[in-house]
Image (cartoon, rainbow over all chains, first blue to last red; front, side, top):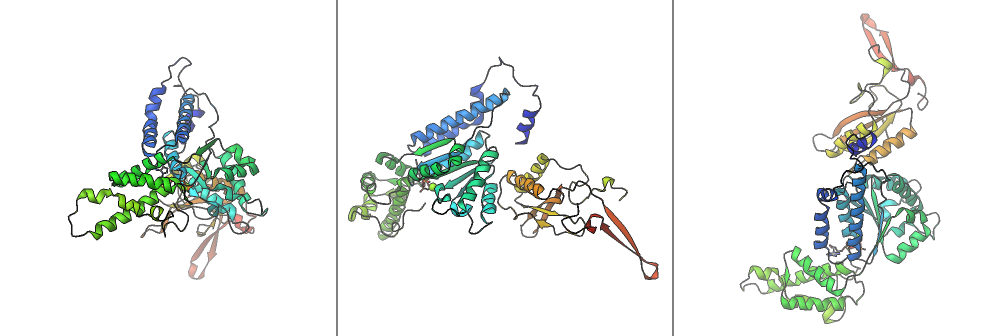
Length: 320
Length: 144
Ligand SMILES: Nc1ncnc2c1ncn2[C@@H]1O[C@H](COP(=O)(O)OP(=O)(O)OP(=O)(O)O)[C@@H](O)[C@H]1O
Ligand SMILES: [Mg+2]
């Protein structure tokens, strides 16, 4: 913070002239932003519109940085965002990356993510809300404040709800502390739209609305394989075939939560694989056996057997 | 007090230096956060050196990554108590320390009248000394 501020204030004798060449490339290399964008591409399947928007924001901030070198002063761009999409579409995951990206571009100082919901912000009695909200804001400073299911902050049916007080404080900080933190609101699209309708102040402070689409079955398969790879597992050929079928059945059932359902299904498959190997103990076991998810580990799921969800893990709506 | 020009209260770190700017305060807070110390803001209008327990302004601030939030609270505290002493302390909770590691004044009253030295004759020609702030003659909250 300090150093750049000081430079901006006194006349900078080293500021390049009007005709000095602009080395966009060097600046780009310098920020190592490509590494992050590549990593994003590699580790997150699909999400085309999201990745495009992140690229655009990165370009904006990079140009902003260059402009400042030429003393072309403009206001710090507003970067508060809204992520909408169904459960498990990667909103939290992308928010975490956002912190890292903004840090690389020198837009936030620390780049950490503080995730909160209504309960962390809104108090139980008069005088409880303001300190609570402020405490969260202080923790998020230098990084990203991620407010999940932000619309629960506003309860129109109860006009004395303390949520309004919290929104009021957030609005102030979003306006006055743009250099100190970036706020990302997240939630389902329709509820979020209604929230913005009743809170125009919030709407006007959010510069980027990014919608996270549901994943196609093909993308879900890729996500599954990526997740296995990260945990040093793999599908056998028949296993992969079974999982493909599993996906096509699973997407039609209730409580489907995109990538999170995939993660949960794989966790259960690992459980079955372990049991299968354990039942065969005595027979020789190779490293490949420890790594491989077979067709039967998938097909034992109730989704196949009875056309409904597996017990226990799925009785409650899927949790992160 | 003849040696203390302007009767400036000299307690804690940096107190013989000119007042710290907000930028310098920010750097000091950064140092505390880097060490994992919890930063507190405290205020008082009783400047007696034995008055070690000042009022806390809000809760201690744990788990912060960045000084901006603390500076925001300092400004808030200055707005509420423009004519009080305000100090920032950094508390180290690690076992064996469990004590403040930093403490410095970030706000002081515009006029600091200083301290009166009172001498007391005692038996056997001994002499007792005590100091009292001129400001603390007035009730709490009306001192500066
Ligand atoms: N595109 C993707 N590629 C790989 N893994 C993904 C992708 N999207 C999500 N995941 C994984 O799916 C899981 C759920 O994602 P995440 O928690 O980001 O979803 P969310 O949109 O925040 O859901 P919710 O609305 O329920 O909070 C995570 O474990 C994440 O790693
Ligand atoms: Mg989430």
